[in-house]
Image (cartoon, rainbow, N blue to C red):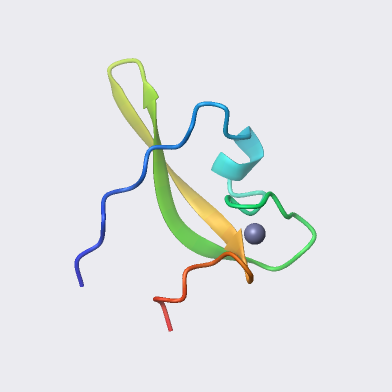
Length: 64
Ligand SMILES: [Zn+2]
């Protein structure tokens, strides 16, 4: 199962989404959140990879 490399997050992406405290896609916090892969953001000298979460509506269906 090949996985695509993490997409690059927009630098305006809310930090709570990168920290996995809110759905990465819609920002929902008052719901059950599931692991949703990772995204990367550019930092000095490279990239930082963040594991992110998604709510039931946004989460990818490929993990069933
Ligand atoms: Zn969501």
